[in-house]
Length: 212
Image (tube, rainbow, N blue to C red):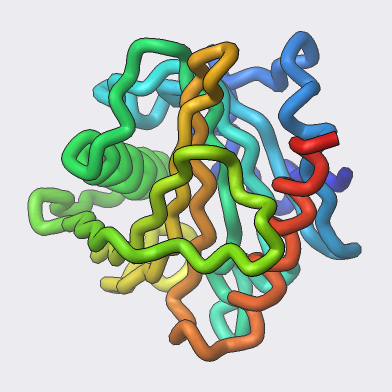
């Protein structure tokens, strides 16, 4: 697995510093994630230092497409993340909307602050719509719920302009450990774009690995 080049994206040190250290003790989740060459990623604690108001506690594994920070790329700001959430949190639509809104508000605010700039996050939004999962391969975890979502925010890393992110979110609770899981594919691209199939293939590989 390739990790973020923090020298190139030095501003991310603001996010990944402090308590957001790589958790060597919880490498199990990362072992199930396989990505193509060129994808990079990181593991951080939940709640992250940039969004202390989040109520979910656990870890996040994120993987970023090769064009993640290239505005003209057809994979600009396209990535996926997996939350492994400690037992006790309800993965309801309302709770997920609240947590992701807090996450993106905090992320944008922190990056803008690191650049001595201000951003109004009060108009950011996160809206989920429940959809029927399509699982022809029968690989989804038992009890999985799927949502189609949009996040409207101000992208802080490259453009510093309003951006609408499309998300496909799948959540479930492990019947044995009671850990919650949230797998989200994210991109500003329309759903017909190739990047969505790429992320779906990665997600399918993740689910197959979980079953082994």
